[in-house]
Image (cartoon, rainbow, N blue to C red; front, top):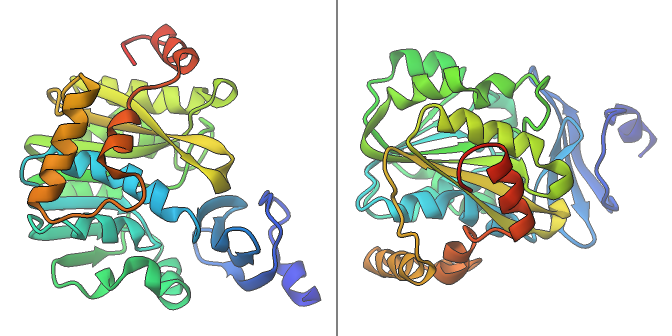
Length: 293
């Protein structure tokens, strides 16, 4: 255990009891820590930031993926940015309309570790013939992709700080490149950091960047217990992909899930629809930054 402790990144800020360290080290791109928590099961932290935990990763990944997939009438080609755990891929491939998924994750070594240590999170998605897995810079990929994506899911590392190395992947210049790879009527969803009054700046930056490129931008959130926060996401499109009225939005999610034979075991259509109804204080903070929340 002493040897393992010596390998831990001094900047690790995982506020969970570590019952067992499963793997720790560094890839060419980041420091990783796979560990068991007595409360949350197997967890993954990157560069000291918690990414996912076994007990509630389904809440996060269902919230990230399903609003975008269900808001599109027939998503056939899907791009996943990041998502090394395989759970985002799992959620996308639940949809029988999907013919092709391109997953671009720079860190091949980390993806391999996830396939080895937490293979059950993907529920067989790694072996799905619809998957094209690429390990390259997403910016370079966008320069040569034929595009035509109906949906894009951004599961990149958090960039709440403007100084983060990943910050450019949440900026307007990047989103303009991404928009060029989309099919008409496409929908984009991205994780966008904590959505709390004290930590709203990072979410606001992501939202504002998307609003410079896409006509319609909507913030939504889901409680992820292991994150200790309401976690924020942003849905973006050229036109409103969802009804504004809560009941109609829930009905649309339920109808399309039923048509596709989908179960939504973590949040369900009603909670997914309600995720777009933000607390009044957060809504006011986002509106103060410009644009409706």
